[in-house]
Length: 163
Image 1 (spheres, rainbow, N blue to C red):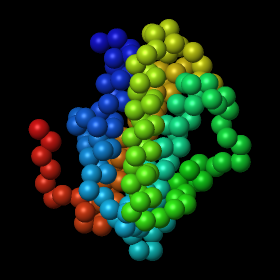
Image 2 (cartoon, helix red, strand yellow):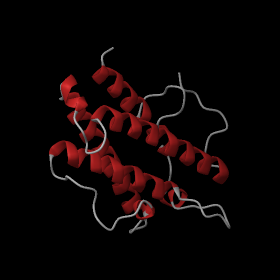
Image 3 (cartoon, one colour):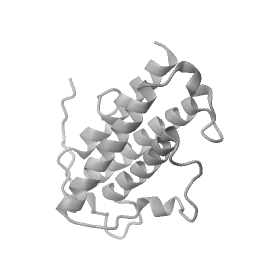
């Protein structure tokens, strides 16, 4: 397996293919808008919806860098800002999930079209392959948070079949 295949393998498994942990799509399967917006009482944690917005933000940064639409991180945006959910309701939740799908597929398509040498270029402070690997780990981390939130709210299945 070459470097591109290895990165695409990780990219696919973080999002939609079962491996050592459930992929993001499985973690979001069946989640309603109300569940996505839920927080444990008295807790200061990000919601499922906020986590998805956060993941979208960083995937969009990568896609815009890959397409040349963006050269620098947007000014005035903090990491906390990336968890903000502006619109609520079923339609907004469906659009958030569709946006996640679009940006994830957009990045994957771009990555699959690159040469091995392209992965050595800086994006801007680290090589592209390192950034892709970091985003894969980032997805895994927040997928775990989403699953924990689902377990706390009782919406995660007691038993899963992943074969």
